[in-house]
Length: 144
Image 1 (spheres, helix red, strand yellow):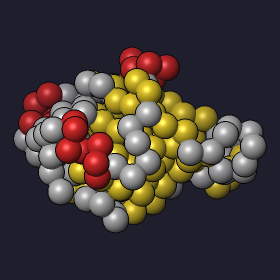
Image 2: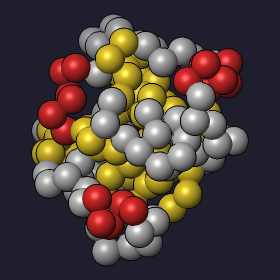
Image 3: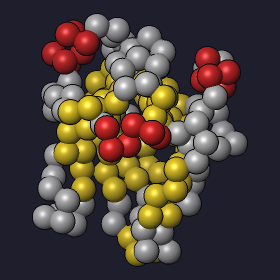
Image 4: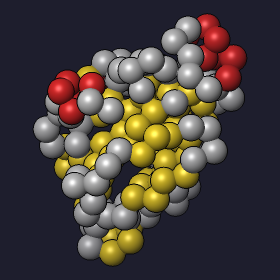
């Protein structure tokens, strides 16, 4: 369900929005928030609830791996977008699960008129890394 009110959104978001995502702010247009759900290194899989304010999106990026790797997005609250390079954007709503294989250039974020959260799952793999690319242009985003 779309919501522009942070107060109303926080009632919908079962995991909480967490702290400002300052470590990765340079790779986002708008404000995002990060709430780790597992402790890095304590589990083979890292999970975090990532929250985007209306209009916030991350830059195009690629999850590299020589084997395995990639990312899963489990949408939990609000409405957002996911897009792979060369493909149409996909509308994201609670319950949507997106499987992103390694080496696929993509971006994700909130719709212009809604807060949005997803659980991001880093898929284990060999020689994994993340490459941040160019921002999603305002023109391309506003055309959605």
